[in-house]
Amino acid sequence: MTPEQVDKPLSARFSRRGMVLARSGWGPDDCLLSFICGGDPEYGHRQYDAGHFSLYRGQSALAGDSGYGGKNTEDHNGVLFDGKGQQLKCAEGRITAYEPGELATYACGNLGDLYNNAALKSYNRHIFFCHDRQRPYMVVYDELQADGAEHTYTWVMQGINATGFMISGEGMRFELSGEYPVIFDDNSGWQMSVMLFASQPPSFTQDINETKWSATASIIEHPRLRGDVTTSASPGFLAFLYPRREGDPVPTVTRVAPHALRINWPDCTDLVAFAPAETDGLRTEGVGFVRR
Image (cartoon, rainbow, N blue to C red; front, side, top):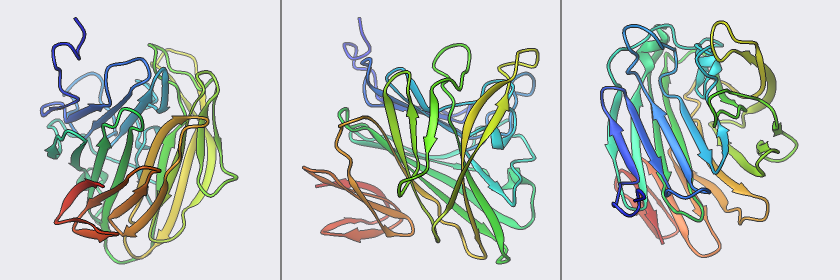
């Protein structure tokens, strides 16, 4: 029996762990999203990783996890506030919203207080995952509010292949020469454009992150993408992540509001919004996913 034969759902929420899983299907080239917020155990594997997501396509982790040895926020796919990550861990799950759907699933996590910084007033990370089997994708919206002073916000994503038991940076690389960064997994042939929008154009750089699978393991190097925005307003990070192969259709993605994207495919148009939005005859009354 396969999961499809027993009609297993394409998304699930695990409240105690603070985790949402969503997938496009159960085949070898399908896409899987893991989104976590809170749920750290009292003992054992505890990390500063609330709001982290991992995105897999086929045999590739195009947005991976740095493993047991990478404990800090900068070792995950998250946001740094004035160069610093989370300072507190949280035992309870922090998934504050979960709305599964046939075409797309929405989830939200609350993590602002985990930075333990009075200047950061609130932070909610919202995600949508599109279950379209031919073109699965995710949209991430970082809703941050600070004290009105100028701060630097850094959107971080790891280029690490963690599909097996051991992590590796082998074959993973970022290209920053185009309009948006692209991550390539040269071992599997998968790639992903990182279309990151913000209140002002992010400054993209990459560096090498060194982590370990465990405290006694050897150091593993992998590339890491950083997108910096310095502003006294909210940075309004809004990211479109679409894992694909060379030759697959690439949509035109337009930011139509600080909290909404319009995605134009050759045969349809999607509106992905985290608050009321309207564009090109598509409309949401609040958080919503609409396809025409």
